[in-house]
Image (cartoon, rainbow, N blue to C red):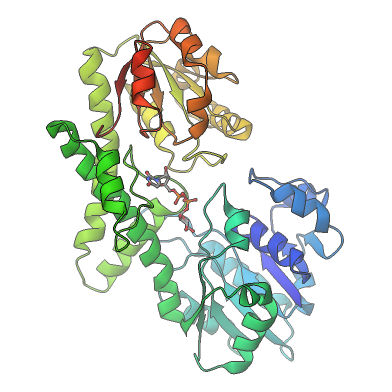
Length: 442
Ligand code: UDX
């Protein structure tokens, strides 16, 4: 089918590349011309495993990129994949979405039939508003939220747990046929469950899923604090809980809390939706509070150990919000560095992902307060990073840390202390090298 994708960020680019590999004819549109230029040459503007390979295979064949909305005129299905970042008041900012819709409206043909599918995470009721924008056009609006994890986004695209489709009319068989049997045919063939419902329900499934996962993490983080006090091990608690299939072991890794482009903004936006409907979001608000406090709790551990942090130097290993991504949005590592710097500490930062290091360098150099530039240095080599530091702080759950030469690291640091904010290291191995080890709840 002829497919349009508006927005070539994490969601849009994966959608465009993924659908091209299903042999659809795909046009990816973005107003960011520098991104489009890169994409036309088969270069991915973002770090995502396996993405560039598939991009190169299809670009300029059945996948084209352009900044020109006019090309969308001849498509059948158009996916809206623009960002819905957090507004100052915590609500989802829908200006990019509505701007994209207005731009699209200018080029669509009133005599043609179009299906407009929202993949962006949008508050309940947004797709109805989109329908209003396209009044007078022959347009069907669909909500089709994405559930992609950054760093594993392409894998998640090809291996979805479910496809959620919200229709204006749940009984619209023609629409169902196009989306299920044509657009997403390979998923149908793999027996991926399709959840077909109304627009509002589909919109809410996305928020409820993210808030639930965030709550699971906040729950285990709260338990971890008690573990610290009572000599219990949160990893074992999670293992023991997770073996119950009603609970499940995923997303029970305690640490310094959740960050990223989705959980923080989606949890806040869901809170707003409750408040707008005059319902007190007791549990979801608590999820958010626990997360904020978790970083403070970890920082207190560091402060309690050193008593005075002033003039200390730390190696912070992990700059992006999680492993295998260059995305710094709401990164716990970056937040922690900022808090450390406020306490007159020097930081040497490292991330395995080169682009994450580049992004961190420009983030700190762009900070108004030049003190950041002076007090933070981002290094390309882990061993250089740990040289002569008073302590090592781990902020992402990257298993690669376990394959490092910790004997060598022990010989390079000034003081053998590790604060493992993700409980990722093998405590016994590390302690056997003479390190003092502090995890979260272990
Ligand atoms: C998430 C959802 O998983 C995805 O379905 C949705 O579409 C977008 O939001 P993502 O933000 O890419 O994906 O990352 P995810 O792997 O879910 O991790 C989010 C944060 O939670 C990270 O900061 C991670 O470190 C943290 N986390 C995750 C934990 O602290 N403990 C866990 O057990 C799992």
